[in-house]
Amino acid sequence: MKKKLSLVIGSIALVLLVSHWLVWILWGTKSLIFSILVITEVLLALTALFLFKDIWIAWLKKSRTITGLQKGVEFAFVIGVMVLLYLVVNQNQARLDLTAQGLYRLSPETTSLLKSLTNELKIISFRPDAASGPAIEYQENLLKTYKAKSKYISLQFVDPIKNPVLASEYKLTEEISTIFEFGGNRVAVSIREVMDQDAQTGRMNYRGEEAFTSAIKSLLDSDVRKAYVLAGHGEFSPNTTSYQGYSDFFTALSHDMIEWKSLDLTKFVEIPQHTSLLIIGRPTHTFSVAELDTIKDYVDRGGNLLVFVEHDTTYLLNDILKEFGVFFEPNIVIEEENYIPQLGNTVFSPRLIPHQITDPLLRRKLPVVVGAAMGLVSVKETNIGNISLEITPLLLSSKTSYAERSLESIRKRKAIKDKEDWEGPLPLGFAVVRKKLQIFRSLDGAITNTVESRLVVFGDADMANNAYLAQWANKDLLLNAVNFLVKRERKITLRPKAPLIAEYNLSSTDQAILISLAILLVIGYIVTGVVVIYNRRKRVKG
Image 1 (cartoon, rainbow, N blue to C red):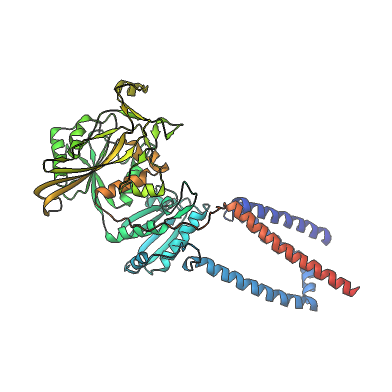
Image 2 (tube, rainbow, N blue to C red):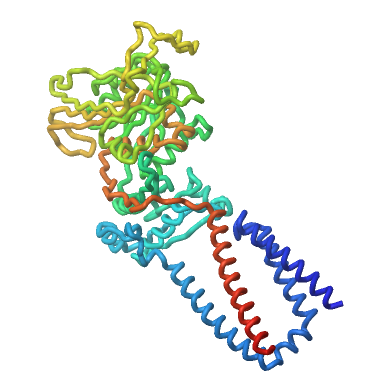
């Protein structure tokens, strides 16, 4: 009876172990099925011990068994010490950097910055437990290195899926993000900023220290700037969360320490003092003369503008843009190169022109995408009376592109190239530094003989919406533009650390299979040894 029972229990145990192994490979250790199998195996083992207690008690009483158990205890002790050492090293692996590239070896600037902390810096790393890969492993180890450098750093890893309340509190725009919080202010760093891949060589660039130290530095500097978003003329809303809304862009501004509010000039006679930036988002309704004068006065006092225009933008906005030597005529750029086939030849990736706004993207070969963009125009004369202009194009369409200028064709979405259209390449964005020589009291109250104001204008508003911001490097471009406008040069220049050899990134399933093969090899080695010893003893007895 017990022989049949042992056969049944052994068969069930074998099925459970094989199932357990397969579940681990496919879904990992955090799945519900994995937990159920573990509980079932434990219950089965306890049941077997109870049913066959007389057998294993008798086995334990044998002298050879006692000697074997002693050897087994010694072996288990050695294995236990090895496992303990592994766990200790695994928990503190970020502190001992043995990588050839020194991925976790912090620069003197970062080390000095962390040692200067005197109050708590809170770091919360959000990522789903199921997420894995070299970027996540690198990020977690690097964060542990940061924590080890200062007793004032608290580090927490959170699954946003399991803890949606906390994720909502921090207004996550990306599932895998790290939040740095200090003195009531917050800065978010996405996984894309931590590690990226060179499009040409395929090598991974490790930028974690650059991103993390920049975030901490901005918090310690307490460099919060005030911005106003113009309203009342059909501009896009900063609070719309739909696919075509702009809430993600303004959330990113808040994370980058830009404190923004809406401003309706029909209700306020002037732009508030100490306003670092005025954002004008594709106004479609006309401005009054008083409103235009208010904006011009703000510019003359050293105000800065971030402007988005499209073919349906009110033409009166040119009165402001011409103060900076740029203007527009209604058009839509049709691209013949680098466009996205699924979305049509009005959605494309323009060429980036070197400037401090675009340089970080050029170094990392990151693409920006625009949709139904409008070509812009700049004046040739950059010195007019007591005003000097430094005009730099930021984005250019290709040589084979053209600007459809017929409003009728634009409305009917039937663009036909003719002699009235502009030939490419066409500027789609400008950065302008305007300097006016005069004795004047600037925005911060200082008496100066030179008033500097800045403008960044893009011939597309879609590039800032939630859909575009989430897929390409538009967010990086726009935040760089904002930092340029508010004269906040806080991005440090740490060289990214690239691996010395090409990498192959294993998925969690691949890793599980390799570990399984290694375990099977060890088991095979042990079984082979047992069989050899058994056969030798059998021959000796014979």
